[in-house]
Length: 326
Length: 298
Image (cartoon, rainbow over all chains, first blue to last red; front, side, top):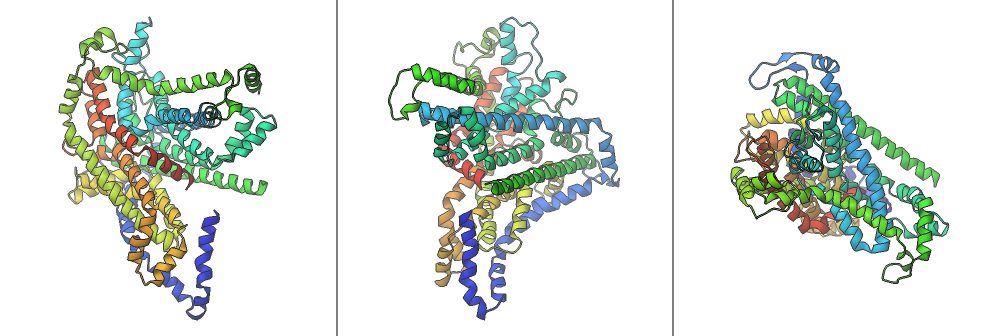
Protein backbone atom coordinates (compact mmCIF):
# COMPACT_ATOMS: atom_id res chain seq x y z
CA UNK A 1 0.00 0.00 0.00
CA UNK A 2 2.72 2.42 1.02
CA UNK A 3 4.57 1.69 -2.20
CA UNK A 4 1.68 2.49 -4.48
CA UNK A 5 0.89 5.80 -2.79
CA UNK A 6 4.53 6.72 -3.13
CA UNK A 7 4.53 6.21 -6.88
CA UNK A 8 1.19 7.99 -7.17
CA UNK A 9 2.69 11.04 -5.53
CA UNK A 10 6.17 11.14 -6.87
CA UNK A 11 5.65 11.94 -10.56
CA UNK A 12 3.27 14.69 -9.57
CA UNK A 13 5.73 16.44 -7.27
CA UNK A 14 8.48 15.96 -9.81
CA UNK A 15 6.41 17.62 -12.49
CA UNK A 16 5.18 20.51 -10.48
CA UNK A 17 8.00 22.94 -11.31
CA UNK A 18 7.68 22.10 -15.00
CA UNK A 19 3.92 22.39 -14.92
CA UNK A 20 4.22 26.07 -14.00
CA UNK A 21 5.65 27.10 -17.33
CA UNK A 22 4.22 24.39 -19.55
CA UNK A 23 0.64 24.27 -18.25
CA UNK A 24 -1.83 21.37 -18.11
CA UNK A 25 -1.51 20.38 -21.75
CA UNK A 26 1.86 18.70 -21.22
CA UNK A 27 0.51 16.33 -18.60
CA UNK A 28 -2.37 15.31 -20.79
CA UNK A 29 0.00 14.62 -23.64
CA UNK A 30 1.98 12.32 -21.39
CA UNK A 31 -0.66 9.62 -21.04
CA UNK A 32 -2.00 10.09 -24.56
CA UNK A 33 1.37 8.94 -25.84
CA UNK A 34 0.79 5.54 -24.24
CA UNK A 35 -2.55 4.94 -25.94
CA UNK A 36 -1.08 3.06 -28.94
CA UNK A 37 0.01 0.34 -26.50
CA UNK A 38 -3.64 -0.16 -25.54
CA UNK A 39 -4.69 -0.49 -29.17
CA UNK A 40 -3.96 -4.18 -29.91
CA UNK A 41 -5.47 -5.27 -26.59
CA UNK A 42 -8.44 -2.97 -27.04
CA UNK A 43 -9.25 -4.19 -30.54
CA UNK A 44 -8.81 -7.84 -29.58
CA UNK A 45 -11.00 -7.29 -26.55
CA UNK A 46 -13.78 -5.71 -28.60
CA UNK A 47 -13.67 -8.49 -31.22
CA UNK A 48 -13.46 -11.49 -28.88
CA UNK A 49 -15.38 -10.28 -25.80
CA UNK A 50 -17.37 -7.10 -26.44
CA UNK A 51 -18.98 -7.83 -29.79
CA UNK A 52 -19.85 -11.49 -29.00
CA UNK A 53 -21.33 -10.52 -25.63
CA UNK A 54 -23.63 -7.93 -27.22
CA UNK A 55 -24.48 -10.26 -30.11
CA UNK A 56 -25.40 -12.99 -27.65
CA UNK A 57 -27.89 -10.66 -25.95
CA UNK A 58 -29.23 -9.80 -29.42
CA UNK A 59 -29.64 -13.50 -30.28
CA UNK A 60 -31.55 -14.00 -27.03
CA UNK A 61 -34.34 -11.79 -28.40
CA UNK A 62 -35.04 -14.15 -31.30
CA UNK A 63 -36.25 -17.61 -32.00
CA UNK A 64 -33.45 -19.10 -34.07
CA UNK A 65 -32.54 -22.66 -34.96
CA UNK A 66 -29.00 -21.61 -35.86
CA UNK A 67 -27.00 -21.71 -39.09
CA UNK A 68 -28.86 -20.52 -42.19
CA UNK A 69 -32.31 -20.65 -40.55
CA UNK A 70 -34.13 -17.29 -40.33
CA UNK A 71 -34.11 -15.27 -37.11
CA UNK A 72 -37.65 -14.66 -35.88
CA UNK A 73 -38.18 -11.76 -33.47
CA UNK A 74 -39.38 -12.94 -30.10
CA UNK A 75 -38.83 -9.90 -27.89
CA UNK A 76 -38.45 -10.97 -24.29
CA UNK A 77 -40.32 -14.18 -25.09
CA UNK A 78 -37.32 -16.40 -24.36
CA UNK A 79 -36.94 -14.84 -20.93
CA UNK A 80 -40.65 -15.26 -20.21
CA UNK A 81 -40.35 -18.92 -21.20
CA UNK A 82 -37.33 -19.30 -18.90
CA UNK A 83 -39.31 -18.14 -15.91
CA UNK A 84 -41.80 -20.96 -16.47
CA UNK A 85 -39.13 -23.58 -17.24
CA UNK A 86 -38.60 -26.07 -14.42
CA UNK A 87 -35.25 -27.15 -15.84
CA UNK A 88 -34.01 -23.55 -15.71
CA UNK A 89 -34.85 -23.29 -12.02
CA UNK A 90 -33.39 -26.74 -11.34
CA UNK A 91 -30.15 -25.68 -13.00
CA UNK A 92 -29.80 -22.64 -10.76
CA UNK A 93 -30.74 -24.64 -7.66
CA UNK A 94 -27.92 -27.01 -8.65
CA UNK A 95 -25.62 -23.99 -8.93
CA UNK A 96 -26.22 -23.48 -5.22
CA UNK A 97 -25.08 -27.07 -4.66
CA UNK A 98 -22.00 -26.34 -6.79
CA UNK A 99 -21.23 -23.35 -4.56
CA UNK A 100 -21.42 -25.60 -1.50
CA UNK A 101 -19.07 -28.11 -3.15
CA UNK A 102 -16.64 -25.64 -4.70
CA UNK A 103 -16.67 -22.72 -2.27
CA UNK A 104 -18.13 -23.41 1.16
CA UNK A 105 -16.66 -26.83 1.93
CA UNK A 106 -13.22 -26.29 0.30
CA UNK A 107 -12.79 -22.88 1.93
CA UNK A 108 -13.68 -24.13 5.42
CA UNK A 109 -11.62 -27.32 5.00
CA UNK A 110 -8.83 -25.30 3.43
CA UNK A 111 -8.73 -22.89 6.36
CA UNK A 112 -8.48 -25.66 8.92
CA UNK A 113 -5.96 -27.68 6.89
CA UNK A 114 -3.79 -24.66 6.12
CA UNK A 115 -3.77 -23.59 9.77
CA UNK A 116 -3.02 -27.13 10.96
CA UNK A 117 -0.20 -27.56 8.43
CA UNK A 118 1.30 -24.15 9.07
CA UNK A 119 0.75 -23.52 12.74
CA UNK A 120 0.71 -27.06 14.15
CA UNK A 121 2.36 -29.74 12.01
CA UNK A 122 4.91 -27.40 10.45
CA UNK A 123 6.25 -26.47 13.86
CA UNK A 124 6.21 -29.97 15.30
CA UNK A 125 7.45 -32.04 12.36
CA UNK A 126 9.30 -29.48 10.25
CA UNK A 127 8.50 -27.67 7.04
CA UNK A 128 9.16 -30.67 4.81
CA UNK A 129 6.20 -32.56 6.21
CA UNK A 130 3.81 -29.69 5.75
CA UNK A 131 4.99 -28.87 2.23
CA UNK A 132 4.71 -32.50 1.10
CA UNK A 133 1.16 -32.65 2.46
CA UNK A 134 0.35 -29.35 0.77
CA UNK A 135 1.60 -30.63 -2.59
CA UNK A 136 -0.52 -33.78 -2.13
CA UNK A 137 -3.68 -31.78 -1.50
CA UNK A 138 -2.92 -29.61 -4.53
CA UNK A 139 -2.38 -32.51 -6.95
CA UNK A 140 -5.99 -32.77 -8.27
CA UNK A 141 -5.84 -29.08 -9.18
CA UNK A 142 -3.16 -29.57 -11.81
CA UNK A 143 -4.82 -32.19 -13.98
CA UNK A 144 -7.22 -31.22 -16.74
CA UNK A 145 -10.67 -31.30 -15.18
CA UNK A 146 -11.87 -33.48 -18.06
CA UNK A 147 -9.27 -36.10 -17.12
CA UNK A 148 -10.34 -36.00 -13.48
CA UNK A 149 -13.96 -36.36 -14.60
CA UNK A 150 -13.26 -39.36 -16.84
CA UNK A 151 -11.34 -41.08 -14.04
CA UNK A 152 -14.10 -40.50 -11.50
CA UNK A 153 -16.76 -41.48 -13.99
CA UNK A 154 -15.15 -44.90 -14.15
CA UNK A 155 -14.58 -45.17 -10.38
CA UNK A 156 -18.27 -44.42 -9.78
CA UNK A 157 -19.59 -46.57 -12.66
CA UNK A 158 -22.35 -48.83 -11.35
CA UNK A 159 -21.21 -52.05 -13.09
CA UNK A 160 -17.46 -51.94 -13.65
CA UNK A 161 -16.44 -49.04 -11.42
CA UNK A 162 -13.82 -49.55 -8.73
CA UNK A 163 -16.04 -48.34 -5.90
CA UNK A 164 -18.93 -50.72 -6.56
CA UNK A 165 -16.68 -53.71 -7.28
CA UNK A 166 -15.12 -52.98 -3.91
CA UNK A 167 -18.52 -52.64 -2.20
CA UNK A 168 -19.73 -55.92 -3.71
CA UNK A 169 -16.50 -57.50 -2.53
CA UNK A 170 -17.33 -56.69 1.09
CA UNK A 171 -20.82 -58.12 0.76
CA UNK A 172 -23.05 -55.24 -0.33
CA UNK A 173 -25.16 -56.92 -3.01
CA UNK A 174 -26.73 -53.87 -4.66
CA UNK A 175 -24.51 -50.84 -4.23
CA UNK A 176 -25.99 -47.53 -5.39
CA UNK A 177 -25.72 -46.48 -9.02
CA UNK A 178 -23.80 -43.38 -7.95
CA UNK A 179 -24.04 -41.23 -11.08
CA UNK A 180 -27.05 -42.98 -12.60
CA UNK A 181 -29.57 -42.49 -9.82
CA UNK A 182 -31.22 -39.07 -9.48
CA UNK A 183 -30.97 -39.22 -5.69
CA UNK A 184 -27.21 -39.92 -5.53
CA UNK A 185 -25.93 -38.19 -8.68
CA UNK A 186 -25.74 -34.66 -7.28
CA UNK A 187 -24.00 -35.61 -4.00
CA UNK A 188 -21.54 -37.75 -5.99
CA UNK A 189 -20.71 -34.87 -8.33
CA UNK A 190 -20.29 -32.61 -5.30
CA UNK A 191 -17.82 -35.01 -3.70
CA UNK A 192 -15.74 -35.11 -6.88
CA UNK A 193 -15.71 -31.31 -7.00
CA UNK A 194 -14.61 -31.05 -3.37
CA UNK A 195 -11.77 -33.45 -4.21
CA UNK A 196 -10.77 -31.31 -7.20
CA UNK A 197 -11.10 -27.97 -5.46
CA UNK A 198 -9.72 -28.44 -1.96
CA UNK A 199 -6.02 -27.91 -2.71
CA UNK A 200 -6.50 -24.40 -4.07
CA UNK A 201 -7.53 -22.71 -0.79
CA UNK A 202 -4.92 -24.71 1.15
CA UNK A 203 -2.10 -23.36 -1.04
CA UNK A 204 -3.38 -19.78 -1.02
CA UNK A 205 -4.05 -19.72 2.72
CA UNK A 206 -0.68 -21.25 3.60
CA UNK A 207 1.06 -18.61 1.51
CA UNK A 208 -1.02 -15.95 3.26
CA UNK A 209 -0.11 -17.25 6.71
CA UNK A 210 3.58 -16.64 6.01
CA UNK A 211 3.07 -12.91 6.28
CA UNK A 212 1.34 -13.15 9.68
CA UNK A 213 3.63 -11.97 12.44
CA UNK A 214 4.66 -15.04 14.50
CA UNK A 215 4.81 -12.89 17.60
CA UNK A 216 1.02 -12.65 17.52
CA UNK A 217 0.82 -16.40 18.01
CA UNK A 218 3.48 -16.45 20.68
CA UNK A 219 1.80 -13.68 22.65
CA UNK A 220 -1.57 -15.45 22.40
CA UNK A 221 0.03 -18.69 23.55
CA UNK A 222 1.59 -16.98 26.57
CA UNK A 223 -1.88 -15.72 27.43
CA UNK A 224 -3.01 -19.35 27.46
CA UNK A 225 -5.00 -19.32 24.22
CA UNK A 226 -5.57 -22.79 22.77
CA UNK A 227 -5.24 -23.72 19.10
CA UNK A 228 -8.89 -23.01 18.35
CA UNK A 229 -8.74 -19.59 20.03
CA UNK A 230 -5.69 -18.64 18.01
CA UNK A 231 -7.34 -19.92 14.84
CA UNK A 232 -10.43 -17.77 15.43
CA UNK A 233 -8.78 -14.67 16.79
CA UNK A 234 -5.57 -14.51 14.73
CA UNK A 235 -5.52 -16.83 11.71
CA UNK A 236 -8.91 -16.02 10.19
CA UNK A 237 -8.86 -12.21 10.64
CA UNK A 238 -5.24 -11.93 9.48
CA UNK A 239 -5.79 -13.68 6.17
CA UNK A 240 -9.22 -12.22 5.47
CA UNK A 241 -8.13 -10.64 2.13
CA UNK A 242 -7.15 -14.06 0.80
CA UNK A 243 -10.39 -15.59 2.08
CA UNK A 244 -12.27 -13.03 0.02
CA UNK A 245 -10.16 -13.69 -3.08
CA UNK A 246 -10.74 -17.45 -2.77
CA UNK A 247 -14.46 -16.95 -2.16
CA UNK A 248 -14.80 -14.67 -5.17
CA UNK A 249 -12.81 -16.76 -7.65
CA UNK A 250 -14.34 -20.06 -6.52
CA UNK A 251 -17.90 -18.72 -6.52
CA UNK A 252 -17.48 -17.47 -10.08
CA UNK A 253 -15.96 -20.83 -11.06
CA UNK A 254 -18.84 -22.70 -9.37
CA UNK A 255 -21.44 -20.67 -11.26
CA UNK A 256 -19.59 -21.32 -14.53
CA UNK A 257 -18.85 -25.04 -13.98
CA UNK A 258 -19.17 -27.06 -17.19
CA UNK A 259 -16.39 -29.62 -17.78
CA UNK A 260 -17.01 -31.87 -14.76
CA UNK A 261 -20.75 -31.99 -15.48
CA UNK A 262 -20.10 -32.81 -19.14
CA UNK A 263 -17.80 -35.74 -18.42
CA UNK A 264 -19.52 -37.03 -15.26
CA UNK A 265 -23.26 -36.92 -15.93
CA UNK A 266 -24.18 -34.69 -18.90
CA UNK A 267 -26.65 -33.02 -16.57
CA UNK A 268 -28.56 -36.24 -15.95
CA UNK A 269 -30.18 -38.38 -14.77
CA UNK A 270 -33.51 -36.56 -15.09
CA UNK A 271 -31.76 -33.16 -14.95
CA UNK A 272 -30.68 -33.87 -11.38
CA UNK A 273 -27.20 -32.45 -12.07
CA UNK A 274 -28.14 -29.91 -14.74
CA UNK A 275 -26.31 -26.57 -14.38
CA UNK A 276 -26.95 -23.31 -16.29
CA UNK A 277 -23.82 -23.51 -18.45
CA UNK A 278 -24.59 -27.07 -19.53
CA UNK A 279 -28.24 -26.18 -20.12
CA UNK A 280 -27.28 -23.35 -22.45
CA UNK A 281 -24.77 -25.62 -24.24
CA UNK A 282 -27.57 -28.19 -24.73
CA UNK A 283 -29.88 -25.51 -26.12
CA UNK A 284 -27.21 -24.18 -28.50
CA UNK A 285 -25.75 -27.34 -29.95
CA UNK A 286 -28.09 -30.20 -29.12
CA UNK A 287 -31.61 -28.80 -29.33
CA UNK A 288 -30.76 -26.02 -31.84
CA UNK A 289 -32.63 -23.44 -29.77
CA UNK A 290 -30.02 -20.73 -30.10
CA UNK A 291 -32.18 -17.87 -28.85
CA UNK A 292 -33.16 -19.82 -25.77
CA UNK A 293 -29.57 -20.85 -25.04
CA UNK A 294 -28.45 -17.24 -25.46
CA UNK A 295 -31.10 -16.16 -22.95
CA UNK A 296 -29.85 -18.71 -20.39
CA UNK A 297 -26.26 -17.53 -20.94
CA UNK A 298 -27.34 -13.90 -20.52
CA UNK A 299 -29.11 -14.63 -17.24
CA UNK A 300 -26.06 -16.58 -16.03
CA UNK A 301 -23.82 -13.63 -16.91
CA UNK A 302 -26.04 -11.26 -14.94
CA UNK A 303 -26.11 -13.59 -11.93
CA UNK A 304 -22.30 -13.87 -11.96
CA UNK A 305 -21.82 -10.10 -12.21
CA UNK A 306 -24.31 -9.46 -9.38
CA UNK A 307 -22.74 -12.10 -7.12
CA UNK A 308 -19.23 -10.77 -7.85
CA UNK A 309 -20.30 -7.21 -7.08
CA UNK A 310 -21.91 -8.35 -3.81
CA UNK A 311 -18.75 -10.20 -2.73
CA UNK A 312 -16.55 -7.23 -3.68
CA UNK A 313 -18.91 -4.94 -1.76
CA UNK A 314 -18.73 -7.13 1.33
CA UNK A 315 -14.95 -7.15 1.06
CA UNK A 316 -14.85 -3.36 0.85
CA UNK A 317 -17.10 -3.06 3.88
CA UNK A 318 -15.03 -5.52 5.90
CA UNK A 319 -11.87 -3.59 5.05
CA UNK A 320 -13.45 -0.30 6.02
CA UNK A 321 -14.70 -1.71 9.31
CA UNK A 322 -11.26 -3.07 10.09
CA UNK A 323 -9.63 0.28 9.45
CA UNK A 324 -12.12 2.03 11.70
CA UNK A 325 -11.82 -0.69 14.36
CA UNK A 326 -8.07 -0.50 14.76
CA UNK B 1 -10.22 -25.70 24.52
CA UNK B 2 -10.79 -29.16 25.96
CA UNK B 3 -8.62 -30.68 23.26
CA UNK B 4 -5.93 -28.10 23.79
CA UNK B 5 -5.63 -28.72 27.54
CA UNK B 6 -5.67 -32.42 26.86
CA UNK B 7 -2.77 -32.01 24.49
CA UNK B 8 -0.91 -29.98 27.09
CA UNK B 9 -1.41 -32.65 29.75
CA UNK B 10 0.06 -35.31 27.51
CA UNK B 11 2.85 -32.94 26.53
CA UNK B 12 3.98 -32.58 30.09
CA UNK B 13 4.34 -36.28 30.72
CA UNK B 14 6.13 -36.96 27.47
CA UNK B 15 9.87 -37.00 27.12
CA UNK B 16 11.75 -34.00 25.99
CA UNK B 17 13.64 -34.29 22.72
CA UNK B 18 15.69 -31.48 21.30
CA UNK B 19 16.10 -30.85 17.56
CA UNK B 20 16.36 -28.02 15.10
CA UNK B 21 12.61 -27.48 15.38
CA UNK B 22 11.45 -25.42 18.32
CA UNK B 23 11.88 -27.79 21.26
CA UNK B 24 8.80 -26.54 23.06
CA UNK B 25 6.64 -28.15 20.38
CA UNK B 26 8.59 -31.36 19.92
CA UNK B 27 6.66 -33.32 22.50
CA UNK B 28 3.47 -35.23 23.02
CA UNK B 29 1.20 -37.84 21.51
CA UNK B 30 -1.42 -35.37 20.31
CA UNK B 31 0.76 -34.21 17.45
CA UNK B 32 0.91 -37.77 16.06
CA UNK B 33 -2.89 -37.92 16.01
CA UNK B 34 -3.08 -34.63 14.11
CA UNK B 35 -0.40 -35.82 11.70
CA UNK B 36 -2.30 -39.08 11.19
CA UNK B 37 -5.48 -37.14 10.37
CA UNK B 38 -3.67 -34.90 7.87
CA UNK B 39 -2.06 -37.97 6.26
CA UNK B 40 -5.45 -39.70 6.00
CA UNK B 41 -6.82 -36.68 4.13
CA UNK B 42 -3.77 -36.85 1.85
CA UNK B 43 -4.35 -40.56 1.20
CA UNK B 44 -7.99 -39.87 0.36
CA UNK B 45 -6.81 -37.33 -2.21
CA UNK B 46 -4.28 -39.79 -3.64
CA UNK B 47 -6.60 -42.84 -3.67
CA UNK B 48 -8.09 -42.22 -7.15
CA UNK B 49 -4.59 -41.83 -8.59
CA UNK B 50 -3.53 -45.06 -6.91
CA UNK B 51 -6.52 -46.99 -8.24
CA UNK B 52 -5.81 -45.59 -11.69
CA UNK B 53 -2.19 -46.74 -11.57
CA UNK B 54 -3.22 -50.19 -10.34
CA UNK B 55 -5.57 -50.69 -13.27
CA UNK B 56 -3.81 -48.96 -16.12
CA UNK B 57 -1.55 -51.96 -16.71
CA UNK B 58 -4.06 -54.75 -16.08
CA UNK B 59 -5.67 -56.95 -18.72
CA UNK B 60 -9.51 -56.89 -18.97
CA UNK B 61 -9.63 -60.56 -17.92
CA UNK B 62 -7.45 -59.88 -14.91
CA UNK B 63 -9.68 -56.93 -14.01
CA UNK B 64 -12.86 -59.00 -14.33
CA UNK B 65 -11.42 -61.85 -12.28
CA UNK B 66 -9.59 -60.04 -9.49
CA UNK B 67 -11.25 -56.63 -9.27
CA UNK B 68 -9.82 -53.13 -9.15
CA UNK B 69 -7.85 -53.42 -5.94
CA UNK B 70 -5.72 -56.45 -6.74
CA UNK B 71 -2.19 -56.01 -8.00
CA UNK B 72 -1.97 -56.72 -11.74
CA UNK B 73 -0.96 -60.32 -12.42
CA UNK B 74 1.25 -59.24 -15.30
CA UNK B 75 2.34 -56.10 -17.07
CA UNK B 76 -0.31 -55.45 -19.73
CA UNK B 77 0.42 -52.62 -22.11
CA UNK B 78 -2.41 -53.09 -24.60
CA UNK B 79 -4.58 -50.55 -22.76
CA UNK B 80 -1.95 -47.85 -23.23
CA UNK B 81 -1.35 -48.92 -26.82
CA UNK B 82 -5.09 -49.01 -27.61
CA UNK B 83 -5.60 -45.52 -26.21
CA UNK B 84 -2.47 -44.19 -27.89
CA UNK B 85 -3.53 -45.48 -31.30
CA UNK B 86 -7.25 -44.83 -31.08
CA UNK B 87 -6.76 -41.16 -30.18
CA UNK B 88 -3.62 -40.71 -32.31
CA UNK B 89 -2.12 -39.38 -29.14
CA UNK B 90 1.01 -37.74 -30.60
CA UNK B 91 -1.25 -35.53 -32.76
CA UNK B 92 -3.34 -34.54 -29.73
CA UNK B 93 -0.24 -33.90 -27.65
CA UNK B 94 1.17 -31.61 -30.34
CA UNK B 95 -2.20 -29.80 -30.73
CA UNK B 96 -2.45 -29.16 -26.99
CA UNK B 97 1.17 -28.06 -26.83
CA UNK B 98 0.98 -25.81 -29.88
CA UNK B 99 -2.23 -24.05 -28.80
CA UNK B 100 -1.07 -23.57 -25.19
CA UNK B 101 2.41 -22.36 -26.11
CA UNK B 102 1.25 -19.82 -28.69
CA UNK B 103 -1.43 -18.54 -26.31
CA UNK B 104 1.09 -18.22 -23.47
CA UNK B 105 3.45 -16.08 -25.57
CA UNK B 106 0.81 -13.92 -27.27
CA UNK B 107 -1.23 -13.38 -24.11
CA UNK B 108 1.87 -12.38 -22.13
CA UNK B 109 2.82 -9.91 -24.86
CA UNK B 110 -0.68 -8.43 -24.97
CA UNK B 111 -0.77 -8.20 -21.16
CA UNK B 112 2.56 -6.38 -21.18
CA UNK B 113 1.36 -3.80 -23.73
CA UNK B 114 -1.91 -3.20 -21.88
CA UNK B 115 -0.21 -3.00 -18.52
CA UNK B 116 2.47 -0.64 -19.87
CA UNK B 117 -0.23 1.82 -20.89
CA UNK B 118 -2.25 1.34 -17.70
CA UNK B 119 0.41 0.91 -15.02
CA UNK B 120 3.17 3.18 -16.34
CA UNK B 121 1.36 5.39 -18.85
CA UNK B 122 -1.47 5.90 -16.32
CA UNK B 123 -3.94 6.50 -19.13
CA UNK B 124 -7.14 8.21 -18.20
CA UNK B 125 -9.96 5.94 -17.04
CA UNK B 126 -7.49 3.15 -16.22
CA UNK B 127 -9.56 1.95 -13.27
CA UNK B 128 -12.50 1.37 -15.59
CA UNK B 129 -10.31 -0.38 -18.13
CA UNK B 130 -8.93 -2.73 -15.48
CA UNK B 131 -12.45 -3.37 -14.15
CA UNK B 132 -13.57 -4.20 -17.69
CA UNK B 133 -10.73 -6.70 -18.15
CA UNK B 134 -11.51 -8.26 -14.78
CA UNK B 135 -15.15 -8.59 -15.77
CA UNK B 136 -14.14 -10.27 -19.03
CA UNK B 137 -12.27 -12.84 -16.99
CA UNK B 138 -15.41 -13.67 -15.00
CA UNK B 139 -17.81 -13.97 -17.93
CA UNK B 140 -19.25 -17.41 -18.59
CA UNK B 141 -17.88 -18.62 -21.92
CA UNK B 142 -21.40 -19.70 -22.87
CA UNK B 143 -22.32 -16.02 -23.25
CA UNK B 144 -19.68 -15.65 -25.98
CA UNK B 145 -19.58 -19.02 -27.66
CA UNK B 146 -22.35 -18.89 -30.21
CA UNK B 147 -21.37 -15.51 -31.71
CA UNK B 148 -17.71 -16.63 -31.67
CA UNK B 149 -18.73 -19.86 -33.39
CA UNK B 150 -20.59 -18.00 -36.16
CA UNK B 151 -17.76 -15.44 -36.47
CA UNK B 152 -15.20 -18.20 -36.90
CA UNK B 153 -17.34 -19.73 -39.65
CA UNK B 154 -17.72 -16.36 -41.35
CA UNK B 155 -13.97 -15.77 -41.59
CA UNK B 156 -13.07 -19.36 -42.47
CA UNK B 157 -11.63 -20.28 -39.07
CA UNK B 158 -14.15 -22.98 -38.18
CA UNK B 159 -12.41 -26.06 -36.81
CA UNK B 160 -9.17 -24.07 -36.82
CA UNK B 161 -6.78 -24.00 -33.91
CA UNK B 162 -6.20 -20.32 -34.61
CA UNK B 163 -9.76 -19.50 -33.55
CA UNK B 164 -9.05 -21.13 -30.17
CA UNK B 165 -5.66 -19.41 -29.96
CA UNK B 166 -7.14 -15.96 -30.62
CA UNK B 167 -9.97 -16.44 -28.11
CA UNK B 168 -7.72 -17.68 -25.30
CA UNK B 169 -5.08 -15.05 -25.98
CA UNK B 170 -7.69 -12.42 -25.17
CA UNK B 171 -9.28 -14.25 -22.22
CA UNK B 172 -5.93 -15.02 -20.57
CA UNK B 173 -4.54 -11.56 -21.23
CA UNK B 174 -7.55 -10.10 -19.43
CA UNK B 175 -6.24 -11.65 -16.23
CA UNK B 176 -2.65 -10.85 -17.15
CA UNK B 177 -3.48 -7.19 -17.70
CA UNK B 178 -5.12 -7.02 -14.29
CA UNK B 179 -2.19 -8.59 -12.49
CA UNK B 180 0.58 -6.88 -14.44
CA UNK B 181 -1.02 -3.43 -14.24
CA UNK B 182 -0.88 -3.50 -10.47
CA UNK B 183 2.73 -4.72 -10.62
CA UNK B 184 3.76 -1.96 -13.03
CA UNK B 185 1.81 0.58 -10.96
CA UNK B 186 4.55 0.24 -8.35
CA UNK B 187 7.42 0.46 -10.86
CA UNK B 188 10.25 2.66 -9.54
CA UNK B 189 9.73 6.05 -11.28
CA UNK B 190 13.40 6.96 -10.91
CA UNK B 191 14.32 4.33 -13.51
CA UNK B 192 11.77 5.68 -15.98
CA UNK B 193 12.85 9.27 -15.44
CA UNK B 194 16.51 8.41 -15.94
CA UNK B 195 15.70 6.63 -19.20
CA UNK B 196 13.52 9.53 -20.37
CA UNK B 197 16.34 11.99 -19.63
CA UNK B 198 18.59 9.89 -21.84
CA UNK B 199 16.08 10.50 -24.58
CA UNK B 200 14.82 6.91 -24.82
CA UNK B 201 11.51 6.47 -26.64
CA UNK B 202 8.54 4.77 -24.99
CA UNK B 203 9.17 1.68 -27.10
CA UNK B 204 12.80 1.49 -25.97
CA UNK B 205 11.89 2.12 -22.33
CA UNK B 206 9.41 -0.73 -22.53
CA UNK B 207 11.94 -3.25 -23.83
CA UNK B 208 15.15 -2.04 -22.19
CA UNK B 209 13.94 -0.83 -18.80
CA UNK B 210 10.55 -2.31 -17.97
CA UNK B 211 10.75 -5.72 -19.65
CA UNK B 212 13.97 -6.94 -17.96
CA UNK B 213 12.58 -6.07 -14.55
CA UNK B 214 9.15 -7.71 -14.95
CA UNK B 215 10.52 -10.77 -16.74
CA UNK B 216 10.08 -13.04 -13.67
CA UNK B 217 6.43 -12.00 -13.32
CA UNK B 218 5.92 -12.50 -17.05
CA UNK B 219 7.34 -16.00 -16.91
CA UNK B 220 5.00 -16.92 -14.05
CA UNK B 221 2.12 -15.54 -16.11
CA UNK B 222 3.20 -17.57 -19.13
CA UNK B 223 3.27 -20.78 -17.11
CA UNK B 224 -0.20 -19.99 -15.82
CA UNK B 225 -1.52 -19.22 -19.30
CA UNK B 226 0.02 -22.41 -20.64
CA UNK B 227 -1.51 -24.66 -17.99
CA UNK B 228 -4.90 -22.93 -18.01
CA UNK B 229 -5.14 -23.21 -21.79
CA UNK B 230 -3.94 -26.81 -21.66
CA UNK B 231 -6.76 -27.67 -19.24
CA UNK B 232 -9.52 -25.74 -21.04
CA UNK B 233 -12.47 -27.77 -22.10
CA UNK B 234 -15.55 -25.87 -23.23
CA UNK B 235 -14.29 -23.66 -26.07
CA UNK B 236 -12.05 -26.35 -27.66
CA UNK B 237 -15.00 -28.77 -27.40
CA UNK B 238 -17.18 -26.45 -29.45
CA UNK B 239 -14.61 -25.00 -31.84
CA UNK B 240 -12.47 -28.04 -32.67
CA UNK B 241 -14.67 -30.62 -34.34
CA UNK B 242 -12.32 -33.01 -36.10
CA UNK B 243 -9.79 -35.56 -34.94
CA UNK B 244 -6.76 -33.78 -36.32
CA UNK B 245 -7.40 -30.50 -34.49
CA UNK B 246 -8.60 -31.66 -31.06
CA UNK B 247 -6.72 -31.38 -27.77
CA UNK B 248 -6.01 -34.09 -25.19
CA UNK B 249 -8.92 -33.42 -22.80
CA UNK B 250 -11.40 -33.42 -25.70
CA UNK B 251 -9.95 -36.65 -27.12
CA UNK B 252 -10.23 -38.40 -23.76
CA UNK B 253 -13.77 -37.16 -23.14
CA UNK B 254 -14.95 -38.15 -26.60
CA UNK B 255 -13.68 -41.71 -26.12
CA UNK B 256 -15.71 -41.96 -22.97
CA UNK B 257 -19.04 -42.84 -24.56
CA UNK B 258 -17.31 -45.56 -26.58
CA UNK B 259 -18.63 -49.01 -25.62
CA UNK B 260 -15.30 -50.53 -26.58
CA UNK B 261 -13.56 -48.67 -23.77
CA UNK B 262 -12.80 -51.21 -21.07
CA UNK B 263 -11.54 -50.29 -17.62
CA UNK B 264 -7.82 -50.73 -18.39
CA UNK B 265 -8.08 -48.52 -21.48
CA UNK B 266 -9.88 -45.78 -19.53
CA UNK B 267 -7.24 -45.89 -16.83
CA UNK B 268 -4.38 -46.01 -19.29
CA UNK B 269 -5.94 -43.06 -21.15
CA UNK B 270 -6.35 -41.03 -17.96
CA UNK B 271 -2.79 -41.84 -16.95
CA UNK B 272 -1.30 -40.90 -20.32
CA UNK B 273 -3.41 -37.71 -20.39
CA UNK B 274 -2.33 -36.49 -17.00
CA UNK B 275 1.37 -37.22 -17.40
CA UNK B 276 2.09 -33.92 -19.24
CA UNK B 277 0.26 -31.92 -16.55
CA UNK B 278 2.23 -33.61 -13.77
CA UNK B 279 5.50 -33.05 -15.67
CA UNK B 280 4.79 -29.31 -15.94
CA UNK B 281 3.88 -29.21 -12.30
CA UNK B 282 7.16 -30.82 -11.27
CA UNK B 283 9.22 -28.59 -13.56
CA UNK B 284 7.56 -25.35 -12.54
CA UNK B 285 6.54 -26.15 -8.99
CA UNK B 286 8.65 -23.46 -7.35
CA UNK B 287 7.72 -20.75 -9.81
CA UNK B 288 4.10 -21.80 -9.55
CA UNK B 289 3.70 -21.63 -5.79
CA UNK B 290 5.28 -18.20 -5.94
CA UNK B 291 2.85 -17.27 -8.69
CA UNK B 292 -0.23 -18.58 -6.88
CA UNK B 293 0.77 -16.34 -4.00
CA UNK B 294 1.23 -13.33 -6.22
CA UNK B 295 -2.20 -13.93 -7.73
CA UNK B 296 -3.76 -14.05 -4.29
CA UNK B 297 -2.33 -10.83 -2.97
CA UNK B 298 -2.56 -8.60 -6.01
